[in-house]
Image 1: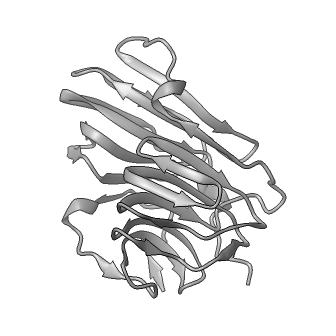
Image 2 (image 1 turned 30 degrees about the vertical axis):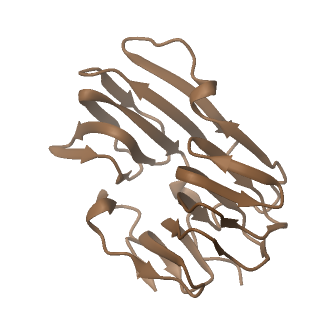
Length: 222
C-alpha cells in the first residue's frame, strides 16, 4: 500500500474529517496519513484505542515515535497522559493499551536503525521562554532530524526553513499556511526546499514539528 508516498509533494490532511478504519486488533482504529507498506509499513497514523482495548505484545523492529493526543496511553513501562512525547527505538518492545481510551499520533519505521535512545517527555513542560510570540521546546535532535513542540500566540508567525523537509501536526488551535487553514488534527508535510511560513489563528496554536527526515524515507527493511 502507498498513501501520500511522493515526498516531493506538499500534502495536507484534515484528519478530523477522515473516517476511522479498523486495525487488525479489535477496539483499535486508525486514520492513515502516509504509508509505504501493508501491516508492516513506514507509516504516519492517528490511532484511537477504545476504553479497555489492548494491542498484543510486539517488538518495534523499525522503531516507534508517538504523541498522546488525548486520554492516557499505557504499557508495562507506565502511564502516558495527553501531551507526552515518546521515542521507542528499534529493538524495543511493549504491550500497549488504554483502560480509559486514548488517541495517539504515531510514526513507525522512521528511525536510524542504530538508534537505541529511548525516552518520554512532557512537551508543555519542555517549553522555553517565548520569542516573538512563539515558545519552543526541542524534543529530539540527531544527524537525521529535529523534533520540536511550539506554543504560538494568536496572530504570531511560525517560520521554519530547515533542510530535509518539514512535517507538522496541529495539536490545538489553528494556523494558516499556504492558503490552507489548519485546525486541530491537521497534518501538513512540506517537501525538501520548501519553508514553513504559518500564522496562528485567533486562539493561538500548539504544534508538533519534525524536520530534516524526508531524504531518509524508505520502505521498511523486511
